[in-house]
Length: 351
Image (tube, rainbow, N blue to C red):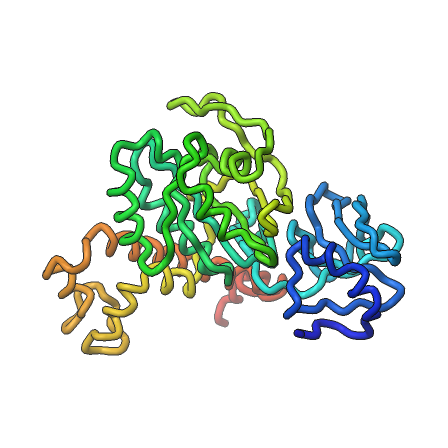
């Protein structure tokens, strides 16, 4: 087992095994906690308080509303494993994966959820397949460190669901695609099989994609959902990040719908989501080929030969440009205040 901290009381692990496993802790990972403290997992964050499921000294599951110090080591998010003492979070334990987006302040990075195994890319196909959205959330999923799976929803309202499934395979090559309908039940069992014991998943997609309806179909829950009109009226919006324990044994995090402007673009994610272009790039004549018309460019040759669509190439260029912009912005914001002040201070005139 992977030892994350120190001084664990092994008898508590035995007493609380069922609780921790139902929360997604597998036997190959151990978060060790001092005997006087408890281990818990964050289910919902409410500003200065967080809801946590934990296990007391008698092995009983407890649901707590906890406070935490302002100087805590990490900003708490849904999915975090935390150390507790007297309904107080003292520390956030190391994360194995994180789903991130740019912070609304325009400067920082915001963690949406942590300790994920699976990212479900939920994209509706009732009005066609939004290829740009799929490409971008795939980049975000790959950047998280978790395994992505494409979930095409509302297939009962699409006349060409099978064709769009093939397109999704092409848009993000090498990952599994499931076509589903919460209304008819198509694809629900294969999706449920993905969410077995020890798996923590998150649904990532735009508002109105049918994420809550998928949860309803998986679990028979009666979460509030409203049909979305073409003008957007009646949209159900999940406003908090929740953790659900599923009957299949897995854990599902439900987060608000994502917008294109919310997406964080990382180099690793771009490389994995566009693995076909990266593979072509390795065949270019020059190692530093920009794929922008350089001599001996295998990417450009593939476009000319019809092996690579110009639309996919344009999407790749846009994401590379956004990644470079985000990197430059973060580098500028990482400067200390004195450094920024020096840059703003004009040089004195030369005597």
